[in-house]
Length: 489
Image 1 (spheres, one colour):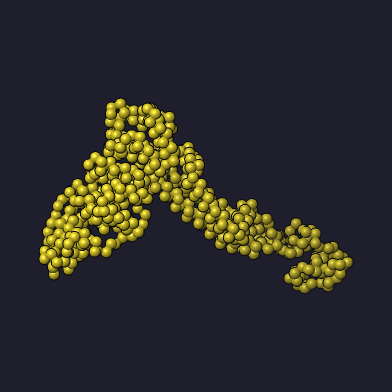
Image 2 (cartoon, helix red, strand yellow):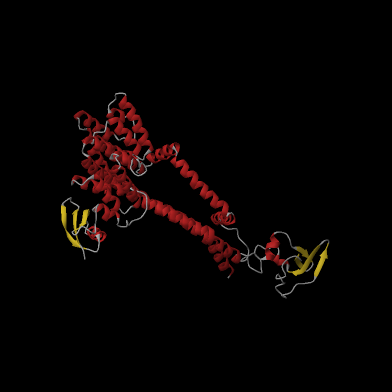
């Protein structure tokens, strides 16, 4: 088996080299990756297996494994950590990108990194190559890479960017965790309600009709359809033949009066009595409770117009997405949420943490304040914060101080305004913003825990109320029928 010589780095950036027996260079690369090493170069000691190109050929010839999925902040944070470590250790940018493009489990990110590597090899700068992928790399990411190239400290800035992205990912996950539980419970519960309305209630309606079928004699007596005769009361001949004389079990003679036919022989006590002697009122159909009637009507509408209901639901989802993605929708929805107790406070703290973290990172790396504000607003993901940041930037250009410009926007708490003012006066604005970001990151953690502790009992109460309405609506008629039958006995 051929002997291969390898050069690699561990996660701390320490250089490693050695030899290993393997069938080919691809097997060497796979074995080193299993050990958690970053492969720099692999070549055969006989110089016949790896051939020219070393790592490039060995890694590129290896089949990439992974999945195609959207590139998330976490993927970018890992990429920056790896790239910064390799650049700091002295590995050329092209080789570092080659390694990352091959090793990443996200094939979409891997493709982008490989194309950037090819662009750089073709003469483009790193910032030019990365600007060709705006859907993957945010404007903040691209601005920091450009600043790193201009300042000659690309490795340090990429490592700092990795730290920033990791904090952003952590912050996003905290917010997501606070909303995931109510979203899941709401969707699951709506599915259960739909099943009850479409499948369960129609079966209960059949039970109601089966046990509450009215006695035809007493019902027609109440409706005035009986006729008094010399032998008692008669019922229309169109009545079902199952309504025989309870004394004889058969009908009396049929007779005609005018254009109507009647059956004689129905005793007079069968008509006009408050309780029918035949059924003792047990078969008298009592009206369903109002709650039950509402549920039955909703169920009938859904089952009878299922296509219309589905069309309405789909149209609502589409229109809601369009509305929530529009400027008007974002302003109104976020404005409403800001007024909701606890939730509004969490939104403010989250927006403040994102604003401070992004602005601090950009200022630390030499990006001018007005440009840093523009980038911060565009990557904030919050419509109100973006608009406020845009107005603050305009005020800065006109000569106002940052703290003074922030003070007129209610989305920024008074504490952050005061801390920014101190940072401006001391000439340490970037450091102060970094401290603010850390402080509000902890505040967001506490706010998420508070929201979660409140949402859970609120959801339980709301779900319990809806379940109570459905259960009462389904079982009240059954209880009423049971009481009626007990009264008969």
